[in-house]
Image 1 (cartoon, rainbow, N blue to C red):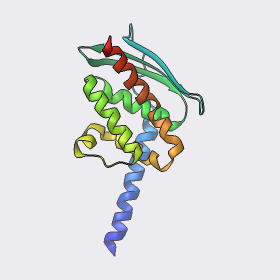
Image 2 (image 1 turned 180 degrees about the horizontal axis):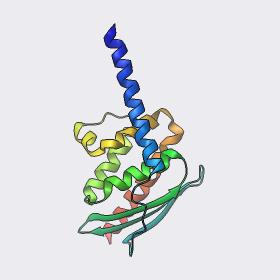
Image 3 (image 1 turned 120 degrees about the vertical axis):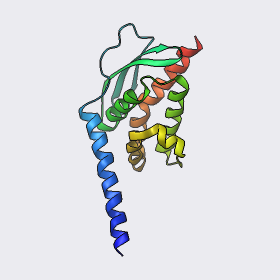
Image 4 (image 1 turned 90 degrees about the horizontal axis):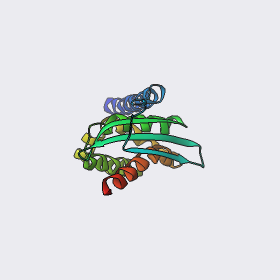
Length: 156
């Protein structure tokens, strides 16, 4: 009987940790400085909810060497973009694409592999968003925009 309570407590503790991560990234977004002479400079928005981002990247040797993301919108979209900015800097394009795929799988509620879990790190905090399907687009907006822009840039 005690194990049931500790299990519920553990789940509550994880929810609190994930909520704290999201709130921290919302209140103190990472990598918001303007990137000088960016290789990628894009605006993404969701006209239905008003979330919008300005994403800038420097790409060297098929890797993100610098990222700057600013925007406005709901806490989930802003925290997700901040988590993205923190994750992608210094990563290869292949690693960025793998992270985007893992985030999509996480938000769809699909099973995440150990490797994907390692890639995601604090991003697993976004997993709770899947309970609110209308918010999944908020969490994915910056990820999809960056992924598409990086793919287009590397084709050049």
